[in-house]
Amino acid sequence: MVQQDIASYIYQISGQNPFLCMQCGTCTASCTGREAMDFPPRTVMRMLQMGNLAVLDLKSIWVCSTCLICTARCPRGIDIARLMEALRVINLRRGREVLVAEKIPPELLLKVPQMALTSGFRKLSA
Ligand code: SF4
Ligand code: SF4
Image (cartoon, rainbow, N blue to C red; front, side, top):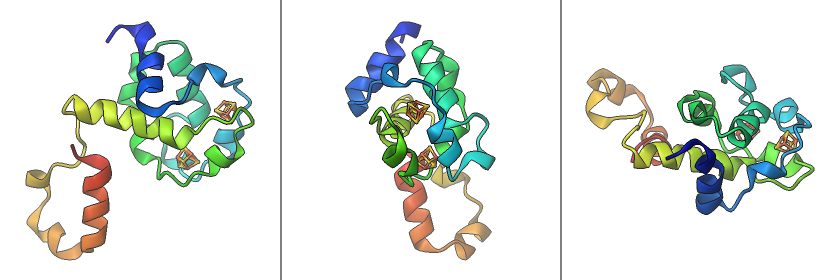
C-alpha cells in the first residue's frame, strides 16, 4: 500500500472520505475512549489525510468501542466509527490481530464472561 492510497482504501472499505474532515475536534471532545487512546479521533483523521501509514499502528483504533457518539456529532457527516472499523479490518486482513486464541492464558478463560470473549474475537481477531 503506498502512502497516498490509505485514504482511498479506507473509502473503499467504509464509504467514508477522510478528506471531508475540517479538523474541528468535535469527535475528540466527544470520544468516550479518548483517555485510553494514544491519539484522538481528530488526529486519526489528519493522519489519514496526510497518508501517514503509522495510523495503522495506533492503539486508538483498537480502543474505539464503536459507541457512535463521534459519528452522531460530526458536522461533516463522517461516520468515524465505521472508519475506525475499516482501519481494524485493514490490520486484520494483514494478519495483525490483537487477540489470538492460543495466547489467552487458560486461567483467564475461566474468569472472562463468554459474551466478552465472543465480542473480543469479533472485533480483535481475523
Ligand atoms: S468531528 Fe468530523 S469534521 Fe470534526 S474533527 Fe472529527 S471527523 Fe473531522
Ligand atoms: S466511536 Fe470510537 S472514536 Fe467515536 S466516540 Fe466512540 S470510542 Fe471514540
